[in-house]
Image (cartoon, rainbow, N blue to C red; front, side, top):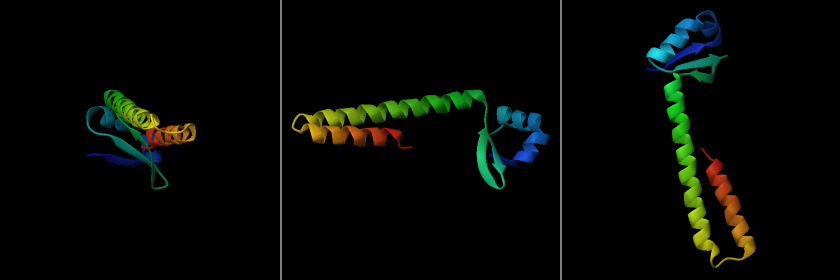
Length: 93
């Protein structure tokens, strides 16, 4: 279960918040009632970063394959448009 704390609670009890993130679940830290950051164990962080990188790699490969397949019969202007579209898709969450 995710625990939500405000920033002053975390400042006063940083060790407890860190222990909770390491041993139990993620800690969402709010400031003025708005979630700002998440505290989590480093292994979980690494898995998330690696999953994000893999997703971006797959999206780029798909966009590249689609652009290459279409590029065989396209003008230079149409190829440029497809490249820009692929860049936009890769950068979307």
